[in-house]
Length: 272
Image (cartoon, rainbow, N blue to C red; front, top):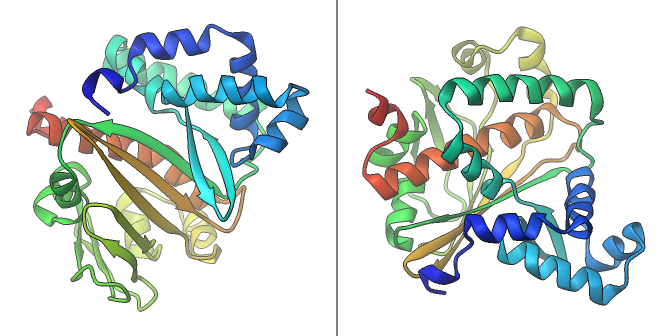
């Protein structure tokens, strides 16, 4: 893929212009991880029509897919919408809109029905530099305010340092490590010390600590001069607090990573 082939704002608007495609996105927003057969049955559309719509949505970056055995599972990808918001909304407008959207979701929407969060973004960088952005403390501290103490070998333990809080647990381990291509590890333990630093109440901390440990996977695909990055965060509970937090947190973290790698400065540094 060259730069001209990567999704553009025009691609997004063209994809959203069709009501059938908007219906597909609504279905995936309500229940991510559907295969083609499930989407056809739920929307009462012909297989060929759904396939064509999905191809357009994927080309626009609005739908991303994950292979699960022989199945191809489809997920709504919010990255292009977030990019549009970044382009036309000021920080003040964005905060106000997010507050209204959060209120609307709290009043109207049921809990997420899938335990998996999937997000795809395109970053103008190299796989080697993106790998550093995901693993090297010199990068992660700048855009994420945390670092990892590990050798990044499969099975190795990981010590997290999140805003000065050191989190150690034998279940924090590297699951997969294929440099510049794929990285996977178990998520950190939600300790009382971390809860205090990030502003969580005792009840929230207890809920997080009671949920099964989740894991995150990063897939890197070189599409010069861009790298396609897909983040898959798997939890065990569809309506769990962990899933809610990572679903809100990952878009912000990845936007900051993209800014750092493409401009050389993290958002907080740019604002300084």
